[in-house]
Length: 417
Ligand code: PHE
Image (cartoon, rainbow, N blue to C red):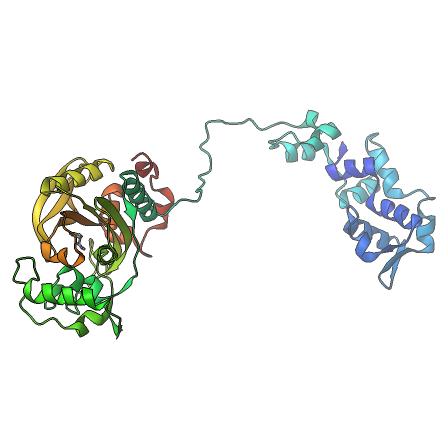
């Protein structure tokens, strides 16, 4: 038994494309470009040409004499289509229709449609749905994984840190990546012979920058050389403005803090800054020559070491890090200085998280700041390593990040902070 294919059924209902074309051309000639828009035009063109019904003259589609007669005479294919249902086709006729894919053995049609998943309007209209076996849905099959757009984990952490600071009432500061040594070091009482200034620690650029106003420069010179009016004896070396003018890639965001000090701060106040910093260091699992710092300070009457430790604990508890250990450290501009470590239960180890301290009088006097200022700088990548349990910073920053990780990391870890 032969049955109409979907194409065959369609033509039976709507007419054969070549006949429809001829009918159209009888009404009026068509530009080839317009005719192209007709349904099934390619098929119509193929057969109308084969039948010698049409010609194309200067881009216009016209009927031939034979074409003019075509609709009056019986068209074989059309007749045959009508015979399919009655099962009256000869072998020859079966061949003709099969060639055009208008009929198939009933069995074949069923086979083809066995796997049908959806009930389409087409199936409904043609009534074919009665002959089709629908595939059963298996609702337990896992779906195809999709990877919607996701923030880079480092950006996510940066945004969350910003959110926490803002929530705690801090204002955000920003500053340039290219700095003078003045803002990166001299302004905060780092001596000009400090080892951190060496070329193996700092990326210097070839140019020199401008120093700020003379008044501030003189105050810095005085405090560096003799301690100014702070009671300190200073570093007791001659301060060289040329060294201070040297351009470099900022080594810490504390430069931004000091630009703000020079502009003036409200008392009491809280500020923060998040940005990229650069250090001429060998790369290893916890160091890269560039990374991000989140810096902050609070200036207010009555602040002390306890306030600093309290702030650090509070900050990290907002991130879900509860086990914090402090260790005394050294910075030329803070006294005392503290490092804090957080314990990762998952990785079973302490991870260095933050460097902090109370700014020394020599680092505040030039800016006329008379209240204690507690401050800190933390490496954002270290925090990201902690949160995402990564052993290497290279899995957090730069082109060495694993794409699979970026797609699949658990965004909710940070979202629930
Ligand atoms: N600048 C320090 C660093 O880069 C961080 C810090 C900032 C420490 C402010 C104390 C006070 O590690």
